[in-house]
Length: 302
Length: 310
Image (cartoon, rainbow over all chains, first blue to last red; front, side, top):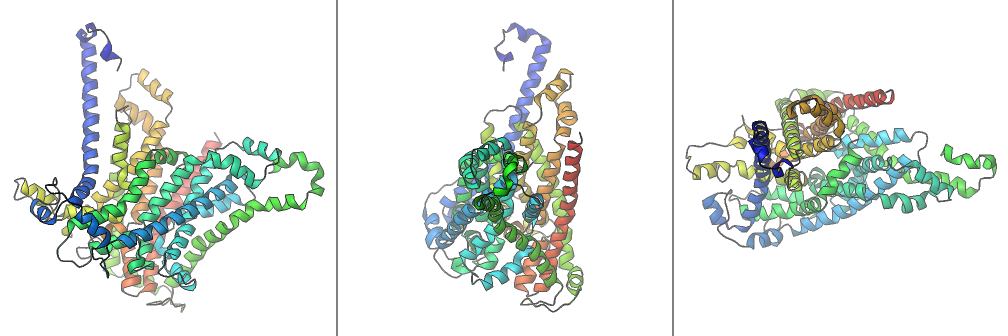
């Protein structure tokens, strides 16, 4: 602050002292409130991280919410490959792999489709394109429950029941609404003159997309990828209904783990499992969060 | 498009087949998505409406039954409780997450140090699934190991904190967790709105001698009214879809005290083999969403008209 460096004679001025005091009080309030909330937000994560390294007798004795007095990696190893979930005792490794195999292709495909759709709906408008866009928008709000029975029927007919491929199909179809919305709202702000000039120079649909639109797209593609990745990774309803056992994605396995009918809660292993399940979206978010907030306001909430 | 075709207007007749084909490329690119949307939004909805009017039980059947599933649904206590819970939960969750989000956004907007650190901490719950959030908060609420245990260990041996395990308070436990999960998102949206306010307006208010509190209530917040509506709608539709959180945290219990419409759908369809009635319940969720979203889209249309007419 500029005032702080002014000559000390200013400090004798009663009005300035009062203003300064008010300013300091305001700062204390701001940082105080923010810090309290930050603590409230951080504690659950810290609790889980700590507990994944503590051993069970210590947790039972000191309670869940405590600093670790013991340290071991055992819980992580067990959660990963030997803990009993549902039927088998192979940890959640397979479910983790399932989620990776589901999330990565579904994210890439739905984002690519959204980028192309957004490009058409903003730069190659045709009679009725606004209606098409509005209809796609409706998909954003469709509750998954309404689509359950139809999907069950379609997956059955395509022989995709209880398969990762079936879930990929579902997420690609459902993702179209979101990805198209994000990309279209972003591309609308690219000046039409740019496209016009390119077309006069003889560039066609694909050339303009590759040479002009795509190089301008990273901000919105980052948002779309983060949104789709975290959304698909964290999705639970379809995973638990359309797959079972070793085909389940990780969210479904985590619920099974929490309700596995085990009498004694194995908090350290559960903590490690929960963290393994939360790590990929957290990582994506920590790496790209800055762009996410910025891009969200550019594309999503217009 | 039309403006672009101008230089070629004179020789429209001899457009080559290549050019004609080129004109259909955008449509061809869009076609699969149009079909998918048609299927997913319209055919699925109609299909589900039909199933909800049929006598489907363990397997979908297409024998028409009329509104019996809806009547049965609305005469079950469980469904009434679920719908009531949805209203109570939505109201408190939206107001709670919105208010905390706004407070945090205003505080973060005071040119603070380490803004990125605070923002990251407030937003990270959004990246974590409801399943994980519900599981972990279930532990924190657990009287045997969680908050109650901690406080008792610190010396207050009569301290009682068992929100999630009493049917009168279990809904509150879900609300707190929901607010914890979503207020950061509300904060991000509000913050984006605050940052977009024209700095000249704020300066003008300050020159006029308005205190910072008055500057907010009279000048800044009214200009971001559209953000309030957006936050309200987004949070409401999160609330209506609440499923994973309640399932992971309380399983709808104790008893049926924290059951939600989405949980009833799941239960009817997959545990009780009442597909028709379950689909009827799903249609009621769709109806609740429509009750929120149709007025919102009308509002958006109205606002756009008003802006375009000056």
